[in-house]
Amino acid sequence: MIRSSQREFFKPERLLAFSDGVFAIAVTLLVLDLRLPPEATAGGDAGVAAALLAMWPKLLIFAFTFIVIGIGWLGHHRKFSYIHKVDSGLLWLNLLYLLSLCLVPFATSLLSDHSDRISFVVYSCVMALVMLLAAGLSAYGLRVPYLAATEMPPGARQDMILSPSLTGVIFLASAALAAADRTSFAHWALVLIVPVSAWSGSRAPKRS
Image (cartoon, rainbow, N blue to C red; front, side):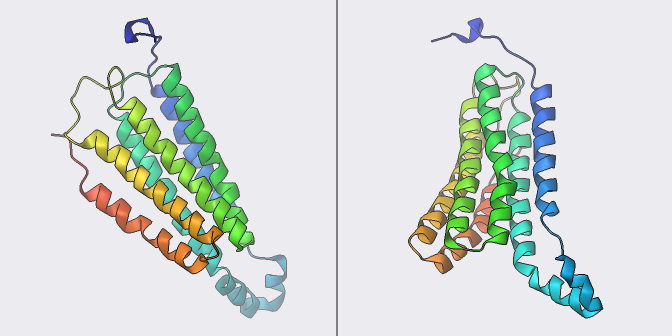
Protein backbone atom coordinates (compact mmCIF):
# COMPACT_ATOMS: atom_id res chain seq x y z
CA MET A 1 0.00 0.00 0.00
CA ILE A 2 1.36 3.40 -1.02
CA ARG A 3 1.74 5.84 1.85
CA SER A 4 0.43 9.39 1.46
CA SER A 5 4.00 10.71 1.68
CA GLN A 6 4.90 8.63 -1.40
CA ARG A 7 1.91 9.64 -3.53
CA GLU A 8 1.98 12.31 -6.21
CA PHE A 9 -0.56 15.00 -5.41
CA PHE A 10 -2.01 17.70 -7.64
CA LYS A 11 -4.05 20.84 -7.17
CA PRO A 12 -7.75 20.29 -7.94
CA GLU A 13 -8.28 23.34 -10.19
CA ARG A 14 -8.05 21.46 -13.51
CA LEU A 15 -10.24 18.64 -12.20
CA LEU A 16 -12.90 21.19 -11.23
CA ALA A 17 -12.68 23.05 -14.54
CA PHE A 18 -13.04 19.81 -16.50
CA SER A 19 -15.88 18.59 -14.26
CA ASP A 20 -17.81 21.87 -14.60
CA GLY A 21 -17.43 21.62 -18.37
CA VAL A 22 -18.88 18.10 -18.42
CA PHE A 23 -21.79 19.18 -16.22
CA ALA A 24 -22.47 22.12 -18.54
CA ILE A 25 -22.37 19.94 -21.66
CA ALA A 26 -24.62 17.31 -20.05
CA VAL A 27 -27.39 19.80 -19.21
CA THR A 28 -27.03 21.44 -22.64
CA LEU A 29 -27.50 18.10 -24.40
CA LEU A 30 -30.65 17.54 -22.38
CA VAL A 31 -32.40 20.55 -23.86
CA LEU A 32 -31.33 19.70 -27.43
CA ASP A 33 -33.80 16.81 -27.32
CA LEU A 34 -36.69 19.27 -26.86
CA ARG A 35 -37.84 20.17 -30.36
CA LEU A 36 -41.16 20.28 -32.14
CA PRO A 37 -41.79 17.81 -34.97
CA PRO A 38 -41.53 19.43 -38.43
CA GLU A 39 -45.17 18.76 -39.19
CA ALA A 40 -46.29 20.83 -36.18
CA THR A 41 -45.80 24.12 -38.04
CA ALA A 42 -47.97 22.93 -40.93
CA GLY A 43 -51.12 23.37 -38.83
CA GLY A 44 -50.40 26.97 -37.93
CA ASP A 45 -50.86 28.21 -34.38
CA ALA A 46 -53.24 25.40 -33.51
CA GLY A 47 -50.75 22.79 -34.67
CA VAL A 48 -47.91 24.35 -32.68
CA ALA A 49 -50.07 24.59 -29.57
CA ALA A 50 -51.15 20.95 -29.91
CA ALA A 51 -47.54 19.85 -30.41
CA LEU A 52 -46.42 21.79 -27.33
CA LEU A 53 -49.14 20.18 -25.23
CA ALA A 54 -48.11 16.77 -26.52
CA MET A 55 -44.53 17.46 -25.38
CA TRP A 56 -45.39 17.66 -21.66
CA PRO A 57 -43.90 14.19 -20.87
CA LYS A 58 -40.59 15.23 -22.46
CA LEU A 59 -40.63 18.54 -20.59
CA LEU A 60 -41.30 16.73 -17.32
CA ILE A 61 -38.43 14.28 -17.89
CA PHE A 62 -36.13 17.17 -18.85
CA ALA A 63 -37.02 19.19 -15.74
CA PHE A 64 -36.64 16.20 -13.43
CA THR A 65 -33.30 15.17 -14.91
CA PHE A 66 -32.03 18.75 -14.85
CA ILE A 67 -32.87 19.00 -11.14
CA VAL A 68 -31.09 15.71 -10.38
CA ILE A 69 -27.99 16.79 -12.33
CA GLY A 70 -28.16 20.16 -10.58
CA ILE A 71 -28.22 18.44 -7.21
CA GLY A 72 -25.22 16.40 -8.34
CA TRP A 73 -23.33 19.56 -9.32
CA LEU A 74 -24.13 21.18 -5.97
CA GLY A 75 -22.84 18.10 -4.18
CA HIS A 76 -19.70 18.02 -6.32
CA HIS A 77 -19.07 21.72 -5.65
CA ARG A 78 -19.64 21.24 -1.93
CA LYS A 79 -17.31 18.28 -1.49
CA PHE A 80 -14.48 19.92 -3.43
CA SER A 81 -14.75 23.03 -1.28
CA TYR A 82 -13.15 20.84 1.39
CA ILE A 83 -10.67 18.96 -0.83
CA HIS A 84 -7.45 20.86 -1.50
CA LYS A 85 -5.36 18.21 -3.27
CA VAL A 86 -6.00 15.14 -5.41
CA ASP A 87 -4.05 12.07 -6.45
CA SER A 88 -4.38 9.66 -9.38
CA GLY A 89 -6.95 7.56 -7.53
CA LEU A 90 -9.24 10.52 -6.95
CA LEU A 91 -8.72 11.71 -10.52
CA TRP A 92 -9.75 8.33 -11.94
CA LEU A 93 -12.74 8.05 -9.63
CA ASN A 94 -13.89 11.51 -10.72
CA LEU A 95 -13.45 10.47 -14.36
CA LEU A 96 -15.68 7.42 -13.79
CA TYR A 97 -18.26 9.70 -12.20
CA LEU A 98 -18.14 12.04 -15.21
CA LEU A 99 -18.36 9.04 -17.55
CA SER A 100 -21.64 8.03 -15.93
CA LEU A 101 -22.82 11.65 -16.15
CA CYS A 102 -22.17 11.65 -19.91
CA LEU A 103 -24.63 8.76 -20.25
CA VAL A 104 -27.47 10.80 -18.73
CA PRO A 105 -28.46 12.70 -21.93
CA PHE A 106 -28.59 9.39 -23.85
CA ALA A 107 -30.73 7.72 -21.18
CA THR A 108 -32.99 10.77 -20.98
CA SER A 109 -33.45 10.88 -24.75
CA LEU A 110 -34.18 7.14 -24.78
CA LEU A 111 -36.89 7.55 -22.15
CA SER A 112 -38.35 10.63 -23.84
CA ASP A 113 -38.63 8.95 -27.23
CA HIS A 114 -39.58 5.46 -26.07
CA SER A 115 -41.68 5.47 -22.91
CA ASP A 116 -41.49 1.69 -22.52
CA ARG A 117 -40.40 -0.44 -19.60
CA ILE A 118 -36.86 -1.13 -20.87
CA SER A 119 -36.16 2.56 -21.48
CA PHE A 120 -37.30 3.36 -17.94
CA VAL A 121 -35.04 0.65 -16.50
CA VAL A 122 -32.05 1.96 -18.49
CA TYR A 123 -32.73 5.53 -17.39
CA SER A 124 -33.09 4.59 -13.71
CA CYS A 125 -29.95 2.42 -13.76
CA VAL A 126 -27.87 5.20 -15.35
CA MET A 127 -29.10 7.72 -12.79
CA ALA A 128 -28.44 5.25 -9.97
CA LEU A 129 -24.89 4.76 -11.25
CA VAL A 130 -24.32 8.53 -11.23
CA MET A 131 -25.57 8.87 -7.66
CA LEU A 132 -23.67 5.87 -6.28
CA LEU A 133 -20.42 7.02 -7.90
CA ALA A 134 -21.00 10.46 -6.35
CA ALA A 135 -21.30 8.76 -2.96
CA GLY A 136 -18.12 6.80 -3.64
CA LEU A 137 -16.31 9.99 -4.63
CA SER A 138 -17.33 11.56 -1.31
CA ALA A 139 -16.28 8.49 0.66
CA TYR A 140 -12.88 8.41 -1.04
CA GLY A 141 -12.04 12.11 -1.22
CA LEU A 142 -13.42 13.51 2.03
CA ARG A 143 -10.64 12.19 4.23
CA VAL A 144 -7.00 12.68 4.98
CA PRO A 145 -4.79 13.44 3.03
CA TYR A 146 -7.15 15.18 0.60
CA LEU A 147 -8.98 17.48 3.01
CA ALA A 148 -8.13 21.14 3.35
CA ALA A 149 -6.69 22.48 6.55
CA THR A 150 -10.06 23.80 7.70
CA GLU A 151 -12.07 21.21 9.59
CA MET A 152 -15.31 19.87 8.19
CA PRO A 153 -18.47 20.41 10.23
CA PRO A 154 -19.49 17.32 12.23
CA GLY A 155 -21.47 14.92 10.09
CA ALA A 156 -20.72 16.69 6.79
CA ARG A 157 -18.83 13.72 5.32
CA GLN A 158 -21.57 11.29 6.32
CA ASP A 159 -24.21 13.57 4.79
CA MET A 160 -22.36 13.83 1.48
CA ILE A 161 -22.19 10.04 1.34
CA LEU A 162 -25.72 9.37 2.58
CA SER A 163 -27.62 11.81 0.35
CA PRO A 164 -26.48 10.46 -3.07
CA SER A 165 -26.57 6.90 -1.72
CA LEU A 166 -30.26 7.24 -0.80
CA THR A 167 -31.02 8.76 -4.20
CA GLY A 168 -29.17 5.94 -5.93
CA VAL A 169 -31.08 3.33 -3.95
CA ILE A 170 -34.39 4.97 -4.92
CA PHE A 171 -33.39 4.85 -8.59
CA LEU A 172 -32.43 1.17 -8.26
CA ALA A 173 -35.72 0.39 -6.52
CA SER A 174 -37.56 2.21 -9.31
CA ALA A 175 -35.67 0.18 -11.94
CA ALA A 176 -36.53 -3.07 -10.11
CA LEU A 177 -40.22 -2.12 -9.94
CA ALA A 178 -40.27 -1.29 -13.65
CA ALA A 179 -38.51 -4.56 -14.50
CA ALA A 180 -41.19 -6.39 -12.49
CA ASP A 181 -43.85 -4.64 -14.60
CA ARG A 182 -44.89 -2.33 -11.76
CA THR A 183 -44.32 0.81 -13.81
CA SER A 184 -46.80 3.03 -11.97
CA PHE A 185 -45.12 2.23 -8.65
CA ALA A 186 -41.73 2.85 -10.29
CA HIS A 187 -42.83 6.36 -11.34
CA TRP A 188 -44.06 7.19 -7.86
CA ALA A 189 -40.80 5.91 -6.37
CA LEU A 190 -38.91 8.57 -8.32
CA VAL A 191 -41.11 11.27 -6.80
CA LEU A 192 -39.45 10.45 -3.46
CA ILE A 193 -36.10 11.74 -4.74
CA VAL A 194 -37.00 15.44 -4.46
CA PRO A 195 -38.16 15.37 -0.79
CA VAL A 196 -35.30 13.04 0.16
CA SER A 197 -32.78 15.40 -1.44
CA ALA A 198 -34.45 18.40 0.21
CA TRP A 199 -34.36 16.63 3.58
CA SER A 200 -30.69 15.76 3.16
CA GLY A 201 -29.89 19.33 2.16
CA SER A 202 -31.78 20.82 5.09
CA ARG A 203 -29.85 18.75 7.60
CA ALA A 204 -26.47 19.45 5.96
CA PRO A 205 -24.04 20.96 8.50
CA LYS A 206 -22.87 24.45 7.72
CA ARG A 207 -19.36 25.82 7.99
CA SER A 208 -18.73 27.71 11.18
